[in-house]
Length: 229
Image: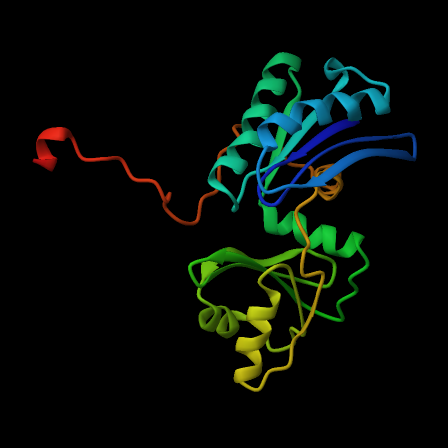
C-alpha cells in the first residue's frame, strides 16, 4: 500500500508518503510551519517525498487529505491537490478532519493521556475548534465550533488533558469551574505523517473530498451597484 497524505489546513504545510507491506513500513515526510504560501509549497513537497520514497505518482494506491476545520483557503488547497492527483492516477481518496489528525499527531509527539483528552484550537473571535478523543486518539466528539464556556461543559468528567493552540483557554475556563486540566503541545499543528497513519489504519475511502467548514466565510459578496445607491 502506497499512501500520499497532504495537509494545508492550518499553520503548517506537510506531505508524506507511507509505504506499507509485507510487515514493513517506510514513512517519508516533510512538514513546514507557515501562515501563508501553502499553495506554492505543497506540490514541491509532494515531488520530494515521492522521490524520497522512490515511487511515481502512478504507484499511489490512496491519497489522503485533511478536510478541515481550519483556514478557508488552506483547507481547499490540499483537497484540490488530492482530487487532481487522484484523477490523474486513479488512486482512491481518503479524508478526515484536522482535529482527528492532531489527536494522532499528539500521540506521535509523545502525549500520553490517562483517559480522554481534548484538542482545542484557537478559531479566533473568542471561539474554539474542539474535539474530544479517548486515550488512543479515537474520536469521541467533534469537531465543533464552540465558545470556551460551552466547550468546558462538553468535556467528559474524567478528561484531564488539552492539546493545541486553544488548550490554555480551555484550561482557564475549566479552572474557573474548579476543574484542573493540564495542557501540552501548545503549537501543535495537523501533520501529513499522522494523517497517513490514520489512512493506513482505516478501511474506509471517500467518494468525494469536501471541505469541512464550521463557520461562514469572512468575506461576503458586495451588493449590486443599484442596491448600494
